[in-house]
Image 1 (cartoon, rainbow, N blue to C red):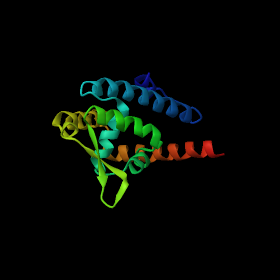
Image 2 (image 1 turned 180 degrees about the vertical axis):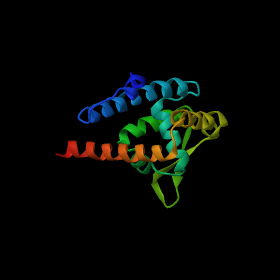
Image 3 (image 1 turned 45 degrees about the horizontal axis):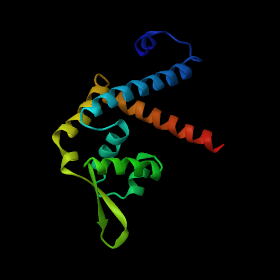
Image 4 (image 1 turned 60 degrees about the vertical axis):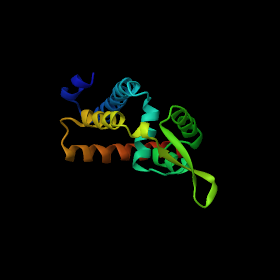
Length: 154
């Protein structure tokens, strides 16, 4: 469907509808591919996102990581519990605050197989898209997300 939609001429009034349909289709395809690929390394899409984000924020607290991922802390806790149980993440005490725990990746999570998997998926998804188009798409999607938050607050 995406392939044919990319080449069909459309009127300006059809553009927002087609854009959102293309976005939803892309999300479904990404999820399907990501889940299938992540299973090969023992992860789901949600868990791979946590590992990927934690790799950029090593030592973050659960609250900090939840904020960075844009999800609720209870949902993240379930993912962290599962990742800890499977040996991808460990919790460590924070110096100076015994109530908080810092999250760290384990050697298993740092393995080249997982690192290569995450890098490969990103590269595959961006193949053939010039950097300036990626930046424009990022700005557009961030604006759509911002507009969506306004819908729920009205």
